[in-house]
Length: 90
Image 1 (cartoon, rainbow, N blue to C red):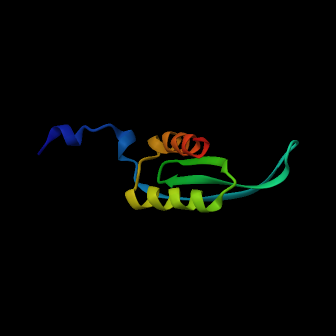
Image 2 (cartoon, helix red, strand yellow; image 1 turned 120 degrees about the horizontal axis):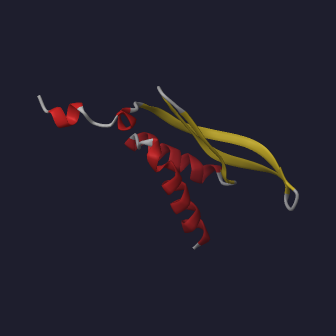
């Protein structure tokens, strides 16, 4: 038996149940009411919300599909969001 695998950190053993879409109608004093989309992560141990990432539903749905396809650990959510925002501004 490989003891290194058995003693792996518990945080990385979180079973990913999935990522899903957050849809909200929000208000901003400069632009008024707008539809916002974000990402919800759900596992056996935690729920992570990242609301109001974009006003483009298609982009968020594409990211969610890739996150679910690769069962990416939630540790990477903020990096992916940051990369997406930088890409949109470039």
